[in-house]
Figure 1: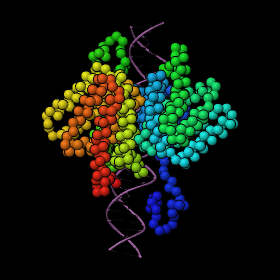
Figure 2: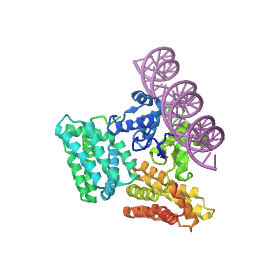
Figure 3: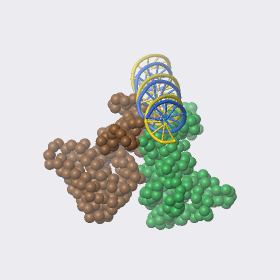
Figure 4: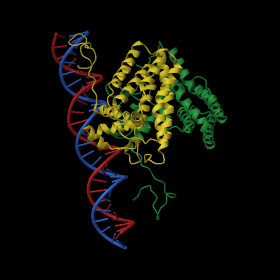
Length: 246
Length: 246
DNA sequence: AATTTTGATATGTGATCACACTTGCGTTGA
DNA sequence: TCAACGCAAGTGTGATCACATATCAAAATT
């Protein structure tokens, strides 16, 4: 038997060989679509067809349709009456709804994390912030993808310390839903004078370090709100001129 | 064309015929499994096989596997390393986690609903409470299924008034996850001297009627907590004797 | 010329088949 | 007698096919 269980007295120990852990095609498709959605690769209101995605991902329709179905149940995609799927359109109401809920839930997560976070967690967080500083030091043309990824890693490193297996999937779902908005906002940020995101993150870390629950909630809310508020004002400004997502 | 769109000048208007809205087999399977889970038809730690469910539902494996996949993503089922699915086991930690999160989110929902709820909503809620009274008046052998269903209808009638399309799916997911626990608790309630659930519900309605947000949160939390606290004490009592779900 | 009809293309859904892996039981060996 | 081996049944996964429906464009009719 070649299972991961420890073989009692012979040939190989788990110290030498790590279990390889098979990953299904469906999981890869699901992860890839998740990544694309959080990074905002798909634009709001864009229609996604199963066969189209299958071709793009170089696989058959089977894993894609199951992944799309899963994404629809967590509201990362929207089911059209035709049974097709599209990435949900952006409306002001939906953005307000998302922001309000994210502050509630991620605020709770960081409150729990404040009381549980330990040294190694801080080390990992500092590593992420350091990576951010390096990126900014280079002053290269804004790498939005990298920025989005680092921002995500920073937040989830904190949330992961909250110790709640119920909150985590909810937060992931919320990020999935707000992914498209965020991308648009960050692009806008990059165009209109750079605001230092790392500064907001450092204030969050400070609150965590002093175990100040209320401050952590506050700073986190400020960090989350920023892109939403910016996008909100931008949408309100160009409301009666631009197309508001057909 | 036989679409649902209004035909301009001829035969039938939508006033006469309502769109039938085709329902796929997959949707029916999904709904049925949801219902079964919320009602607690499956016991914790029970393993569900795709072919087994397909046979029980008299369909092929295809709709079942997609429905099961969706239920796994919303944590209503759990993916085993064998790639099979089982209903998640009950642990004290998980129950506490679920309860805490439910109070947070459903509390927010009822807070929003308090400020938006209108006359017709109250009428529907009263109808549900009335139905409950009728059921109890008959003093028939406790119809646990009916009780679970009415309790669900009552809560979701309220939450539906919160106006948040982001909160609603989360609440549904939470109910899906706590379904098995609740069922066990309600059974225990029915055995050990009846506590009047309707009384708790009436207090919630009172708070809603007077638009007292804090009171509504409070009463709702009390209503939600009851079965969890009961089950918690019961599990702690029989901890070192019974099997704690392998 | 405008509208309706009709046909082709595309898409989602469900069923069936093939394959890899796991699991369990029966057999065989020491 | 007991352990190891091996075969068989069961299970999830992915591909392909068949079918109903939706969508769009061209063509025919009014």
